Image (spheres, rainbow, N blue to C red):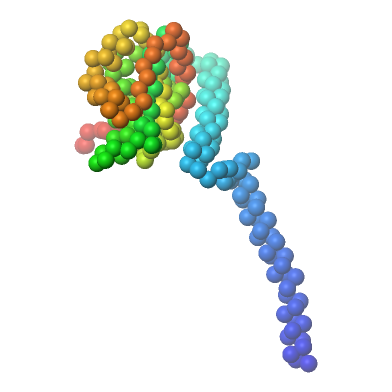
Length: 244
């Protein structure tokens, strides 16, 4: 009889265990839904290209939201009737062009850089010589700046003085967002002046030689109208200070 009663108590606890499991499972599902924000936590496609596109799409959505919030803040700030604040806002407006926070439209140059074909085999050649690296992109960007470019974009994103370009494997990170080739650089400015700057650059000449030897992509073309949209990322400055 005693054994039967213990068995009865054990069976009586089972409904509570089952309920606890269902509650825990429901909590996990809800947490996953909240974390995903209505999107799939595991994007379709297991290849690197799909993952890169998924992350890029998410960042684009966040950039649109950030731009809208920035516009709302600007609108609310301008509605405040304060002389000191108005003075600071007027000062900030005058700096928008120089800091890359305003749209720039005009003629310019478009440079497209592409990795060499994967089918290319050169005995003894370092495979890293067949891909576009951060220093290659940076070289073209620096030359275009020095050639008088008013605004520059990479993959359609505005470059400013604090923009970080980093090479990670076969991709390039731009402000933390991965991009794969082809890499498209667009510079708004006088096409003739920009072309002269590119033609006289030792770094560009070196890249051109590699492009000829190993099939790296290099396309330089003038354009009658380019649009450099405003910088959409966050702006934060860090600088060194003298020790006391």
